[in-house]
Length: 167
Image (tube, rainbow, N blue to C red):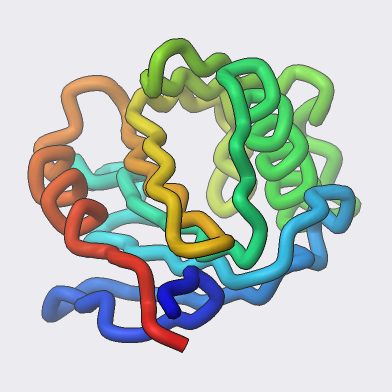
């Protein structure tokens, strides 16, 4: 049976960083999913001087169907970023998490976030989100980057390689 609960076989390009985080996410426990998030970061992701700054791809391999319409997905991604960036920023209070917002329209994503990993400056990301059913689960694929990111095509190809795992 196919499912999206495991983190198997998604390649990590040479020189890239990666993470796997189990759901429920510690920084966004209200996202009621079970599974894992896998992330891929190109060189320069955290370097504000790099053309790849804040350009990355990630997938949610979920045990639930997670059939989210645009509004529900935007809500979940807003909770995700507010939790993540608020946790990273900690007690520095360099930005108001309420100003973090995400819009989704027909798979196109626009996110207004802050660089909690760096100087706390605002960053606008654009990208895509797509869901694939995986048996009784689902695979959500995301590509996000500042507009004009030179690594967007590579991120799109890489995220497209992520598939349902076999349990």
